[in-house]
Length: 407
Image (cartoon, rainbow, N blue to C red):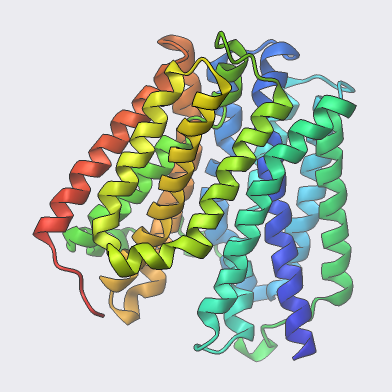
C-alpha cells in the first residue's frame, strides 16, 4: 500500500510538472519571440504548436515502450529528456544563445518527452482496482488542472522580475527533482511476466488506429461528440500564442506578461472549480447533453467578446465566460462519449479522442499565429467563436436526434 502511494505521488508529480512547464511558457513565448527573436506571429504559432504535435505522435510510442520495458524506465527517460529540453530552451530564453532553430528543436524535444501520459495512465491501471480506477485517473486530472493554474502565473511573475530564462530554468530543475524521485523511490508496477515479449516495432505503435476510427465513424453520435471535442480544443488552443500579443497591442489593455499570466491562470482556476465542484449540479438539474449548447454558447460569447475589449474588467468578464464554458464542456463530453460506448471499446474510443485532442492542441496555435499575422489580431478569437457556433448547432442536433445510451 505504501509503495502504491509513493508511485501515485510520483505520477502526480510527473504530470503536474509536465503541465506546469507547458503553462509557464504560454505568456513567455509570444513576447520573447516577437520582441527578442524578432520572428513573426505565424512562426510563433508554429513553435507553439509543434509541442502538442510531437505529443500526438509520441504518446502511443511511449505507451508501447512501457508495455515492453516496464513503466519505470520510460518515466525516467521522459523526465531526463524533459530536463535536457528545458535546458536547451533556457539557453534561448535567457539570451545565452538566441537561436530560433534551437527554440524550435527544444519545443519538439519537450513535446516528445512530455508524451508520457500513456505510461502514467498505465501505472494507474497497474496499481488500482477497477473500483478505484476512476479515482486514480482523477489524480491525473487534478495534476493537469493544478499545473495549468500555476504555470502561466508563475511564468509571468518570474519573467517580470528575473527575466525570461528563470522560469524555464525552474522547469528544468523541477523535472530533475522528479527524475531523482522516480529513480530512487518509484517501484516498477509491471512485473516481467506481464510485459509484452517482443522487440519494439515502430509499426506496432500506431498514432491512430484507423480501423478503430472507421468503427467509430459508423456510430454517428460518438463521432460527433469527438468532433465537438476536437473543435473546442482547436478553438481554445488557437489563442494560446495570440492572447499575449493581443493583450499587449490592444489600446486600453496594454497588459504585461505577469498580467497575461494571471489572466490565463484565472481561466484554469475557474475551469477547475466548475469541473470539481459545480459539474454535479449541471448533470443533475440540466443533464449532460443539455449542457453542451450552454457550454458552447459561453465559449463562443467569451471568444467573440475578447477582441473588442478595451478595459481589464471587460476582459475579465469575457475570459470568465470562456473558463466556465471550458470547465463545463470537457467532463460532459467525456461522460457522453463513455456512456455511448460499450465497455469493451472504452479504452480504444477514449484513446482516439485523446489523440485527436492532442492534434487539435497542436493545430490551434499554428492556425492562431497564421490568421493573426495574415488577417488581423481579432481573428484568432473571432474564428474560434465561429467554430464554437458550429459546436452549438451540432449539440442541438445531437440533443434532438440521438438518445443517450445507458451502457
